[in-house]
Image (cartoon, rainbow, N blue to C red; front, side, top):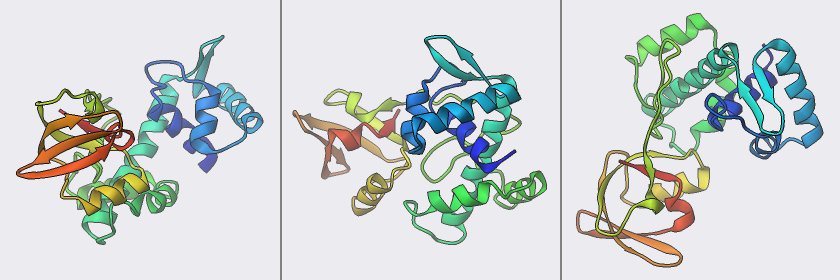
Length: 210
């Protein structure tokens, strides 16, 4: 399978295409590829049996496509663990490197990497690493949806460079307990221990808690 096809399947999966139809436009926006090019690749994936199309609704992964998408994503996440935990890269810098490595990783190398890392369950950003094609649903709530006074645990953050760089300048980490102190039109104020931290709502929407 080509690198391009793997990228499409992974994006469709990350958009929720294993549970609901997703639009070509959403795929185009994520990949930064023109609509005609996306349409052409979607046709190829349909012919290959990796996706199916529902008229007026969108595209979704077939069981065959789901297996392939999860395989590519798993390799990506394993490399992120390796790059952060064993090479010491910052968590905001590993996505692009993992993107390259996921496409040149054989099943044999994936198995060896997984064993070397002692079968990690989460990537550095909190995304669950699935095994044996298991589907793992993370029913976390976005931080901007939490009410004032609630205490929650940070479980995952979106792999967005600007967001990760910002979080690195604060005292926040995956697994921290925080309390929602105040919410206004633009910001959410949270407290960790005795420290207050101000987050704009756009950033809070990309932090997921439980």
